Image 1 (cartoon, rainbow, N blue to C red):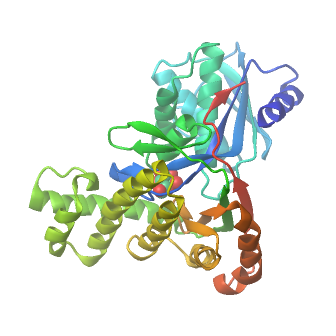
Image 2 (spheres, rainbow, N blue to C red):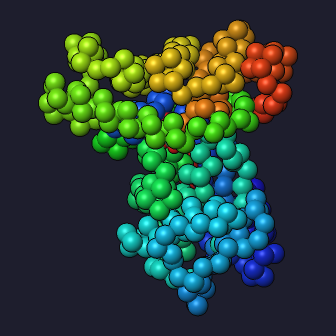
Length: 391
Ligand code: GLA
């Protein structure tokens, strides 16, 4: 559906047909919050909300970019060395960054393109709309140059991640781009962010629903706090390295080391490290539970993860906590936690199919007072979707 819309909008905008179209999904993360940039473990699931990118080559070296979400057209002559800094063109830095990285890695040739973006991944909701745009761009550009060949999904995910961290300049981990590129329908993706090993874990959502509640708030400190957490983790690593040796990331710290050396760290760093170490454990527990079909245990990991993100990592907010509390109070909701960077955005909940209406009703009735807000949340019911695809 999304690709059809991108195709039609491309034809209307550029008066010709696109030569390649690809789409990529947003994601939720069941467990593994803020572990990716600590070389840790994550367990995301792609959602059935997608971004599609349609492209066709030009022979004058120029790039023209449009999105059905934004007015106007962004034009550049040749790929830029630095991101564009005009307000209306900010969104175009994501696809342009990907094209720069693909060309630098010799995955695509550098040449002019017309490009159009369409899709339905909610923006600013912590559902990785930017990764979906990056990965869809990477796949469309690759398919244009190499038609009919299987997508090198990992290479595309890495190029998309380099675009976000290098070109766009956001200090994120690899989870979102890997999830958008590598997730398979009906599966969660167990990803080791250090070795980059992945394993599909059957996410049998028969009788279960993945419900996303987007608080529609994004507190201003979101990106500065994210960077602060990255720095705090680096500071904790330096302390552990001084006492233990050979510690290059919090992945090298286990529970025993945490307990033995926690007095060497100031309280804030100790709590940040405790979140990361225990969150990696929760990912392993959740993977084992999913494989054993024990969805209740997965739900417990989600509630525990949220408490740890709220109390030890301090990246939650009143609105997210309110939704998780309401989830906790609804019978048939197995688990819930914030997903994404935090300070707003969405909660992901694992809900028995028969309890979805009760959960929605409880959120509708009690959220405004509990969260002390007049911003209404939006709810999406998702299923575990396929990662990037062409056509
Ligand atoms: C954002 C980042 C991810 C990850 C999450 C927190 O979504 O883009 O890399 O760090 O926050 O788990």
